[in-house]
Image (cartoon, rainbow, N blue to C red):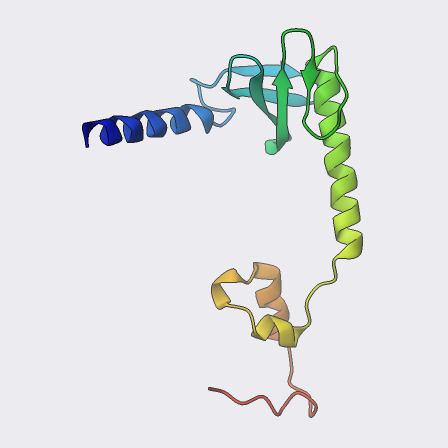
Length: 140
């Protein structure tokens, strides 16, 4: 039981260090043009969370001889290059996801759990008006 308690305490302490925001005075932050790198953990590679405009966009890794970002197989000489490569990948990923996703219909939203609805989905449902085709819905 003592071992479990110590392991739990160590885990909680390490999570606290890993999850420090870039604004925390105890966070190890590197500022590079357009990005903030916040040390998360690791020795080799060292793991850094990458922030752009106060939003985390991903993680990059500092190896002994190079930097990498985990989304491609390239080796970068500078951290800014790894961060830019990650940022460009995330932009492309967002565009392709947005292009392929279709928003659910109001009827599909009514089938979702209320807690899982976003504020935009709630707004859509507020404006939703039953039509003769959908008026056969029965309250349970």
